[in-house]
Length: 256
Image 1: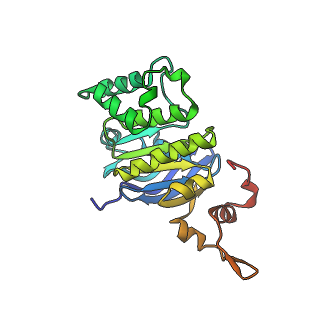
Image 2: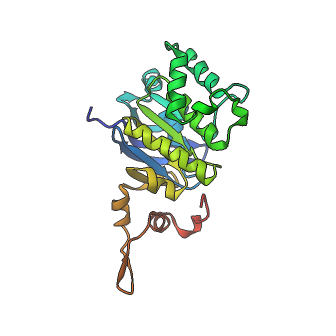
Image 3: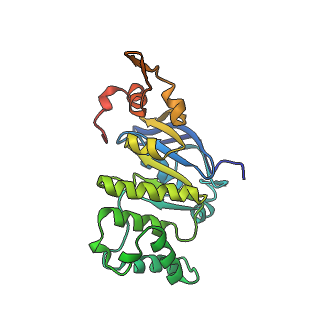
């Protein structure tokens, strides 16, 4: 299919007098990783909640996997998975039991086999028989992502998946996200970490105060600023330079 996996046009959402989204537009190509980058309060989670049918938009249109979010919610939900900012795993159960439980709830055949394949895929086989309460933060997040993949969703929403993780755990999650795209899934990733967007995303949209300021590849965004020259050595602008030139230096410190 050549149509975008996600299409958003004029998305608006307010809470009373507070405008959270003020006309958001973007498209996400199938099989790609798309990063929605912004500071706290920019509206990233609101976008994800609308696209995953957890929240209704006030205005605008959105499609996920060819289905209209507003009128085909059941079809959208069958096509997606959503991983929130905090791991939704049962600490009393083992890692394998968490996966088996979700597979059974989805009425899938051979839940044990599904669980074993996902444990291997996310390097959790050795920890599969341990209670999740003994897992590190990175292991819990990997298990959380594995659980969200049961049923082979075509579109995956990851809402700030590395919040609160140490550098090693973040790298583990990054590898898992890259593997998802390599296997054909479409990933929409929200993040406030500039290096995360720079490392993972095929395209990056910078969301600020409810609007998408720019949307492009990393190379395209870097071209928005002229290179700095120091002793005849060309220095290309970083994504951080692009981000703060667009949203203002006053936001520096949020998430960095």
